[in-house]
Length: 240
Ligand SMILES: C[S@@+](CC[C@H](N)C(=O)[O-])C[C@H]1O[C@@H](n2cnc3c(N)ncnc32)[C@H](O)[C@@H]1O
Image (cartoon, rainbow, N blue to C red; front, side):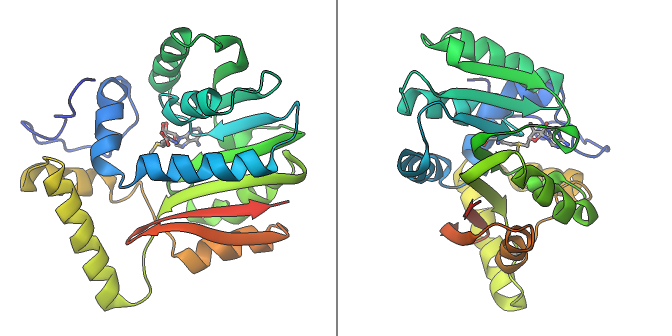
């Protein structure tokens, strides 16, 4: 795995982008920047095991290098399930496709370069969208969640994970400080942390847990719940 040293040595003046340089180190970046990534995957697999039906397709919106989708395909070995990942970064899709090539049941996996706001899908058994809604413009989010609900069959599952804010200013600060500790413990320097935060400032816009739940409820999902929380990160499940 290539080490993420993007913000180590040079000042990066521009906004963060999911380009080739990021795709090369993305798996390391994710494992050192997203707390409990494996645990969320574990819990998501349990939900999907309960809710999927034979012949279902699982869509991953903002799949990046395919880590989650490939792992889900491994953990859900029923041959009649199909897994399709979408991402608008050519570099990410390139990485995902070459990782899938190494997987024995690669025929069940498909990675497609596509803007997820322009998708038109149907009859999905599940949609996974982890740490990606936060990059969709806030004003577009309600319409977008409403639209992706139509990609699911009745009873289909939506799983969303996001960085979140708290409306309590004191606890919000505390959760951010605890997250900064996590990044330091993952080996990022103060300089790397502050440079990345600056590059992300206009790009990653987190909602609160309540705002995310409301998006899903107002889109018409019948059951909506938080299933995981780690300070300023949260995962949600919604059933159509
Ligand atoms: C933080 S990463 C997602 C991580 C991934 N879901 C996982 O759990 O391993 C966000 C991804 O969303 C993609 N993305 C952001 N906006 C997008 C859009 N409008 N259409 C497609 N992909 C998008 C980025 O290219 C990036 O790969």
